[in-house]
Image 1 (cartoon, one colour):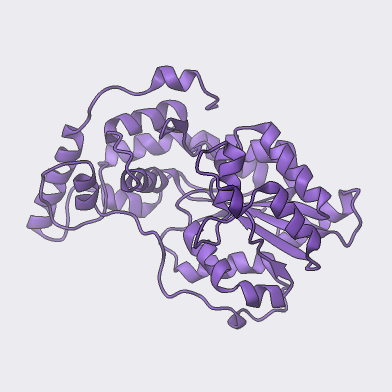
Image 2 (image 1 turned 30 degrees about the vertical axis):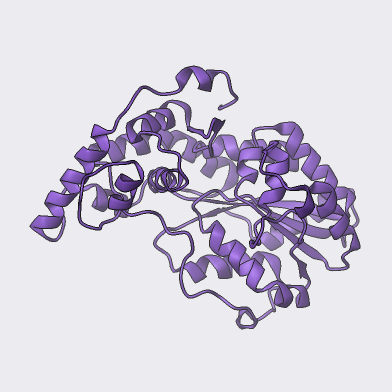
Length: 348
């Protein structure tokens, strides 16, 4: 059974050498495409209200015009996009030390990428502890079928025009893919969680299932409850009316890939039923291990994934359009996968 965040905090306080009134630093690590942009926009828009209720969102380590601490994770990943003036880990620690608030929150989905380096996670853990905070890792997981498709649309939107067939081959063979010459987010959730648990402790990991079809405010309200006292009324905070960073539609994915195929506007649904079930089967065992070890069951696919995989739509024109879109996407299959380069990296 999944522990509540209050129970997790109590266990940590009881078993930690740090004093019982130790402050907490929530590290929201994603994963990608689980409402992270909405969460970060909420943190930005409610900075003052959160501070009034004991929560600091460090300004150091953020990207420009964002509440996400992406500059911090770029530093941790050794990314050339790191900007010294926006602050790194030392600046975050300094800001935490100077704050008298009992709770802090860092948020970046790219913490999930940093998990590939145990030394990096240890550095983050120790830095936060030295600032006087107990680190708590919060991770949201979504069924892998919709995650894989949403992530593909996302990387295409950001200029990585990897052929879909190549991408799918990498995901099923390696549990991830190469993204601008680095290994992308892990789809093996047991591997991801075990990496964090090995450094922060299993009791310091809060795992939540992300439901793509749920109202966005459900996610934000749930996340806010991790930050503030249970007695705090959530109506003191401002919640957005719509989701951020929506995935590309099927025709927009095709245009971004350079296809001249003209199809009706529809959701990106490139897999048929057989392919959907085959992709889901790749992660079934790993997800059962997650349920056993962390108490949260995340199915590798949902009913909606099967409904989108069915080749028929409400009208004949849309049914024909879906078939054309799928064929156009497969026609742009390109070369083989990056298996050799994967073997040179830590992907397991």
